[in-house]
Structure formats: structure tokens, C-alpha cells
Length: 323
Image 1 (cartoon, rainbow, N blue to C red):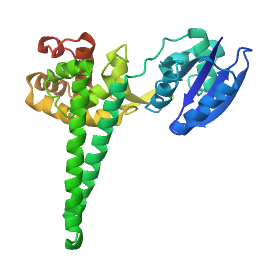
Image 2 (image 1 turned 90 degrees about the vertical axis):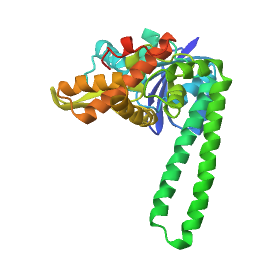
Image 3 (image 1 turned 30 degrees about the vertical axis):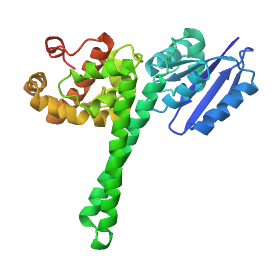
Image 4 (image 1 turned 90 degrees about the horizontal axis):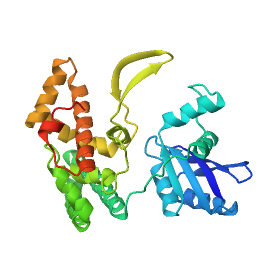
């Protein structure tokens, strides 16, 4: 018997609704931490769970760790577009558009719809993601120390300079480990070469893209891939009205947005296809920051297409489509 688990994921908590074979529900909330995952696993064991289908919404970034934990434990995991679950609630339970989705509704959706399984990233991709995150953290530390050095008193300047030297060495070591991790995995190495064909992407950005999109494809469409990075445009809604200009949702991995910022600047100023893209949007009256955000989104669309097709960048194809 397959048990059904609905998880309402928040930044700090996991509200869980476990459907038993008797059709009754058990509910409990856990911390969204590794320790919380262990307690969740113990709770499942207490209820005799052996085969499980867990389901959660694909919102933000906070679902990833628990999804990977459950998948690693051998359970089926589905990560579903929130709009699907909300529509299910409206159709089945007569809910309104503003009613909050909860763990019970997610479990009922999972039971009725049996959404397709989500596949966790490979060990190589997870290693790469950890290395990329470490590099970003070290660079952040170096920036902080450089700022301190500018205003430091003479008594502490030498100490800060020594620390900067250690940070430079640590960054170099992590970057070497990133290159090695990519080179040691044939799939990542091939995908790295494909991404190198995209004008504007370089040695810093490509590993970040691979850390989240490399290996086995995790998204069916480029739209899903873009939303994962928080680069999808959102209108501000109030009641039945739509106000203001569309903005990036920023509900996703900030590391991806940060990594794509400079490549978007380079693409729109130094590449023919990027300049054409910028000119077209500017002629339509789009402001500079909106164009830059669109270019970031465009780069990710192209990167997704290149990885999915396993074909290098084609200016005739990718330069013509609007991102």
C-alpha cells in the first residue's frame, strides 16, 4: 500500500499531512532542516510507511532539500506547479482563488492526480552546487574584507591583507575543484562545452547554470526553468485589477540571477545577437532595467534549449526568438 504525503513547505517549517490506508489523516509540522527531515522519517516509520508518494509545490527554493531527502530514501516525490493544486482545490472542494493551499489539499491532489515523479540531481551536480555556493560565499567574504581595508586603521591593515591573501587562495582552490568536478563527469563536461557556445556566458556563470540545470533534465519546459530562477515576470495584482509594470518574480534561486546579471550586460553591449535583442526592446519603449532582466531571462531560455537539444548555440535560431 502506497501512503500519500502532502507537504506544505515554508522557509522554516514543513506542514505534513499523511494519508493512511484507512483514508484518515495524520498531521504534524517539522523544521525545514536536516534534523527536521530525520524526525519526519521517524514519524513515517512510526506509522508503518514503507512505500510513499510525497507531493509538494514548486514554489521558491525551500522544497529542494526535503525533496532530495525523500528521494534519497527511496520514496516517490512529485514537485507540482502551485496553479495545478489551486485549480484542483477550486474544482473538487469549491475553494476560492484566495484560499490558502494546505498540506491536506496537496495530499488529496497527489492521490487523485498521481503526478509524475521528480528526479533528484545526481551526486556530481550536488557536489558542483556545493562548490559553487562555497565560491560565492568566499567571494562575499573577500568583498567585505576589501571594503574594511579601505577604511582600516594602520594597526589592523596587515591582518586584513593577510586574510585577503588566504581568501584568494581559498577561492582559487574552490575554482580548481569546480573545474575538476566538471571534467570528471562526462555529462557535465559535454554540457559545459555546449554552454560555452553561448555568447556572454563564461567560466564563472557556466558552473552555476550546470549546478542547477546540469545532468539529467529536471524541467519539462524553459518556462519552468526560468521560474526556478525567479526570472519570470509577474504583474502586481490587487483584487481584480493589475497595477504597475511587470517585474521579475524573484521567487527562486538568487544565485542564478546574480550569476546571469553580468553576462546579460555583456550580451547586450558586446554581442551582435544581444545588441539586436536590446535594440528591439528599446524600440518598443522598454526601460533599460527591464531590458536587462529580459536579457537574463533570454540567456536562461537559450541555455535551457542548448542543454535540452544537446546542440550548440545557433544565432539564426536563438537570436530570432524573444526571451
